[in-house]
Image (cartoon, rainbow, N blue to C red; front, top):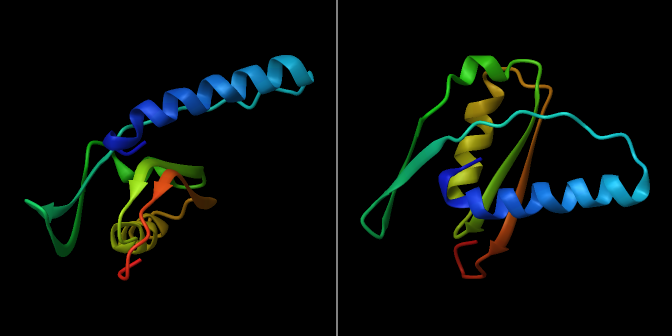
Amino acid sequence: VLKGGSAFFHALVEKLRLFHKYNKCDYVPFTFDFIRVKSYEGTKSTGNVQVSGADLAKFKGKNLLLVEDIIDTGKTMAKLVPMLMEYEPESVRVASLLEKRNPES
């Protein structure tokens, strides 16, 4: 979970719990980690992505769901996903509450 997406993540987890409760589905166990991704200095994108907050090596063989509140230009995710793929996860998917529409996205 990216730090900005924590509120969205908690709402998403609650909805998944309700879905499983009322649909008699098997609950899918999961763990979560918060990571911090830095690609801005002030309000400007630097073009570089720095990740902190978790040992990325533990993602090997795992199905990852990146949860973010808003995707602005998409450049951070475009660099983050390939960076995470270097650690050989089973899959990487992104869930975002909002995607800002602008000429750069």
